[in-house]
Length: 344
Image 1 (cartoon, one colour):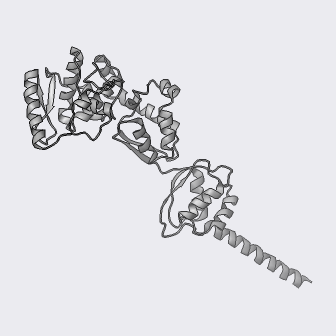
Image 2 (cartoon, one colour):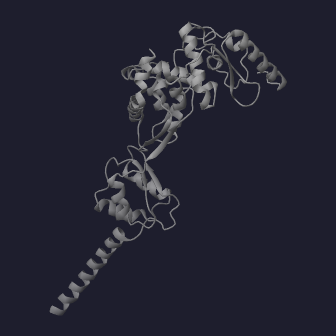
């Protein structure tokens, strides 16, 4: 009898041991492939547990879904709504290591680069390529009147919120959080290097400085002459003259492929066309680089009222204090354009 009991106990022990060994293997054995094809997993907001498992398996980031599910139950990882985010994982990880990492929520950040664009929709598109927020959701928020009014902007001036830079975000950033960070970064920028005080000393709002900077941005790629060009436009503003900025006429007509500004551009009726309306346009005509913003804030003090592109491919400009001098420069440039057969 005792022998039978011992045999039974041994069998039960073996079964229990086998069961525990299986659990140990499920928990501790590698389940992330050694030849991991992609070490980044993105878990969308409001994902269910089955969706998370499916993402990991389809990405080739786990080999065995059964053991992963089992360990997830043991570690209470499985929830009605799973933690979202972008996570960097390592080859050879066990289920336990992988779940501990995903559950801990330590995300791999992403970088959003804002450096070009004419419209807030361009900003939305650039951000949506990197963060989870959809470009349509971002654009819709950017046009939400109550929202943009609450942060001190209008439809026309909102573009001046965006300071070109490289920003770090968590991948699962939504539209509201993206905008919130942009507001914060905007304040940091203007509080630095006395920028806000410099704008006030010029009797200009931050939005006006940015708007003028966006024109300077479209006039030249040479940082060395930006302060001089800014000085020309500031001189015109002080004299109450039309700015007559070619980039504003191009923006007004949306003819962004134009290489030569023609009568159809300068005669186009739009508040953005500074050939027809005195003063600055209602808002920026593009994103303005930091160098252009600082060029306006630290503009060159001179008596130039005119400038014109030089008749070469340097991208630089010839400046003039009188209309006679400007006409001479402009005629040289037009002749050069004709020689190059640049007609539109």
